[in-house]
Every structure is written in structure tokens, then in C-alpha cells.
Amino acid sequence: MQRVRLVRDQVIAALLLPGILCVLAGLYPIVILLQGRPFLHRSERMRDADTAFFLLKIRTMRPAEQADDEPLGGHNTARVTAIGAVLRRTRLDELPQILNVLTGDIGFVGPRPPLRKHVAACPRRYRRVLTATRPGITGLATVLVHKREERLLSRCQTFRETEDVYLTHCLPMKLRIEAIYLRNRSLWLDLRIIWRTFAGLRLSRPVAVSPPVPVSETPVQPKSLARAA
Image 1 (tube, one colour):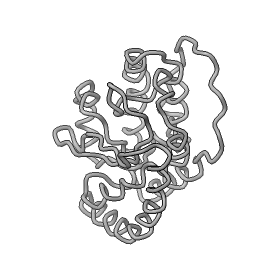
Image 2 (spheres, rainbow, N blue to C red):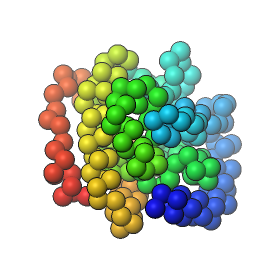
Image 3 (cartoon, rainbow, N blue to C red):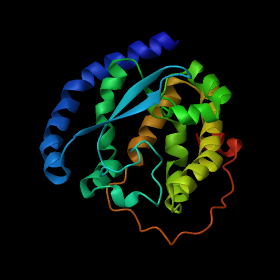
């Protein structure tokens, strides 16, 4: 089954590649003009619990001492460029990942490829998830809790606080949802996830975030997520 999904995604990626390359060619001079080089950002991610690869994205942040791979919290949102904010809202920054699909590192639907340090934080759970399926450009956790994650992290004012909130609140919630996806995985569910991804794109400027407050949100319950899926 894994092999069938891999070949299917690679065939679809090959068919989409010419159109996506045209879009990237159109974006290249705009992005370079507005925020300079480099155009692409390479982020080390894990294909499975032991194998790393470089995930490709259009760069959306100004350079800093800390890596762009950290979760985007309130402490570093100012680093997102004007054009980068547009690319993030429309997810155009993820178009280069079609090349990662072609190489077999990821598929179209699956858990978002994690950072090495996050796999190290939850090794058993990530080994179970990434052994059962490849990471994806979008997934069930992406469509169900992406906005909630943004809201939680936007209240963080330091790198350490952002990382703590992500590890304590966001990561366990996402791994529970990925376990639900694995139990209910089907072509129909994948199509619904892709549809929800496109339907959830934010084409307008997001509402301003309220002043920081202590993080204390009730975790999402897996049963309610199963119904929502």
C-alpha cells in the first residue's frame, strides 16, 4: 500500500510540475526584488524516525541568528517579510515541495515532516506514525489545528516559551490527530483533507492578534476530531 501511494503521488507530482515551475518562475523576480536572496530555504526534516532530508520552501523570513526551522511564535513574527506573509497565507511558499514529492521524501497527504529535535522529544510516537506513512505537504492535523496552533504560539514572547508551548500543547495534540488519521486512512479522507486545505487558505490579511495572555487552552479531544474528519 505504501508503495502504491508513493508511485501515485509521484505520477501526480510529475503531471503538476510544469505548471508549478511556471508559477515559481513568476514568483522568483518578485520575491528577489522585495526581500532579496536566497529565494529558497532548505529545512532539515525527518522522513522517518532515522532518515533526514531537506524540505524546500520559498524563504519568507529575514535572516537571524536562530534558524528559520523553529515554530513561528510571537517573538519572531516581525521577521516575516511583507511578501513572505502573503506567501504563508496562501501557502505558495510550499510550492517547491513538489520536488520533495518527486524524490519520494514526502507525499501530498500525511503528517507534516518534523524537525529532528521534535522526533527526539517523542521518539516512540513518531516512529509509529512515520513507519506507517510518509510525511505530507498537508494532513489531518494541518487542517484541524493549524489556526489553533498559530493562536497559541502567537502569544509567546521568547524562543524558549515558543518551544515549550509547542512541545507541551501543540505537538501532543498533532500526534493524537495523526494517530486518528492512520486508523481512518483512505483515498476519500485524503481528498477531503486536500479540499479542506484549499478551502482554508487565507487570501486576506489576518485579524490582529490580541495582547499576549497566559496559554491555557483545553487540548482538543480525539473523539471530536474523528467526527470533524
